[in-house]
Image (tube, rainbow, N blue to C red; front, side, top):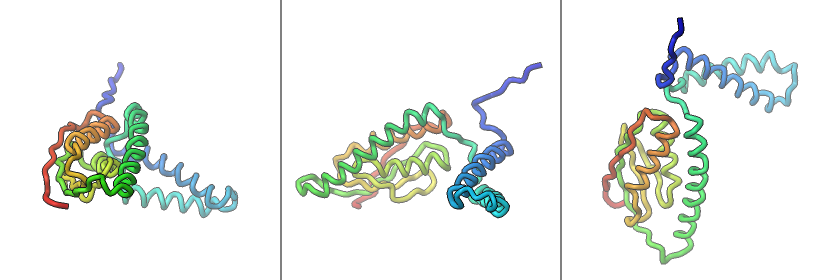
Length: 184
């Protein structure tokens, strides 16, 4: 008898919680050692603090069914770093060169990513695009402030959404829609 494992399905909630508790516990143990300098006499109190912190963190941020994919993370990190540098350079150029156009506007973007971490990561990453800043999220709708009306915003936002979908896996469709929300 052999049981097949369906790797496309997320693990059960109890398994996710146990794995999250172990991972967070290890992280908080490392933090405790860093705080107290590895004093063995501090561990009775430290262990209680770690257990309480793990419990509180699980209550405040339960583990999600969606996990990062290693291949997606490997592709995403260089993209993230490049976008960070490009966004900083663009904003600096616009601030220092008065000839560069600044015509701000607010746009709405309908996300296709699932709720939770993928949408939050998308909002954070959009703020790295040259001249853009995510200003709010309500359901599947994301408000974005853009510095220039001539930016190819629809393509940029859809491209970032595809990057995030690759980071979290195939659970998300990636075609959103941009709508002008008036002057910014």
